[in-house]
Length: 300
Ligand code: SF4
Image 1: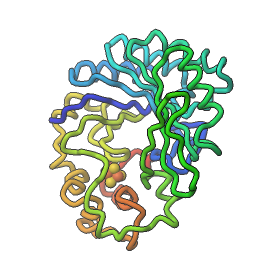
Image 2: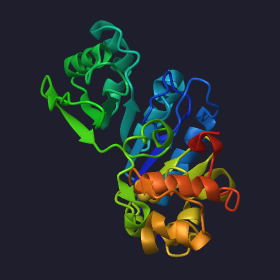
Image 3: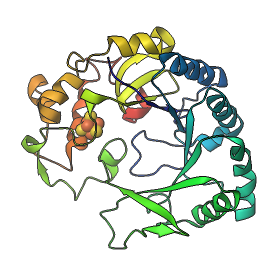
Image 4: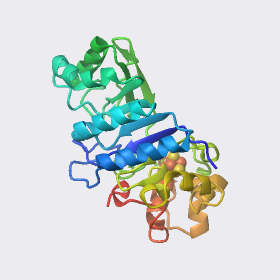
């Protein structure tokens, strides 16, 4: 049994952009969108579970499905969840327009907007749209976070804040599209060194991502069940990381263990643990099609 307190709804794999670092290959042509009916079903299941207090709406780009996302946010609020929406802010044309987009969220009890802006999303760490949205959020009194991902290809420093809003800078992880687009000069680590997952605490899983097809992910592309087929509480009570075919190996010996156990063809050097893990998993999909899925997360 794991103690979930946070679910992330990937309400779509579609995005207005195709960023080089995107874990889930977000793109305008991607398939996969959560209907409102599905959102309500998942939120009811989360409420029934009794341990979850926070729900994030993300993607892809959730603002592409604005009325459905907003209705979902309001329903999550009605059920008593804290709510986060994660966006790239493509819609922040002017501060005044951003106020119009954000105004409906002012009635949500516990709400935060997380806004991604960095050198993958724009020519500058802070895009003009991001600045407009920060100003709009401050005008409305909405909580806002700025999220950025480090960029090894520039010397330009990420600002630490904008108008008093702190910028949280995360490490670049070489999985999803980054495993193809950003690795060339970054292959710094011998594959034998990649003996543990540096990011996910599988023994103390507190959050999962749920995609538009209902797959529940413990890391993007590693699935523990399908909420539409099995229901959330059954999946969570049956899940044992020490018995899951992929998680078990990552716990025992990191991505390196996947290579050794399945004799996966590999190169000598990788950019990081996620790079080796993702490349190994791509090759193991044929063996575990219902666990290493869905297609969009593997760029298919
Ligand atoms: S090492 Fe693998 S399981 Fe861990 S965060 Fe990276 S991709 Fe996910």
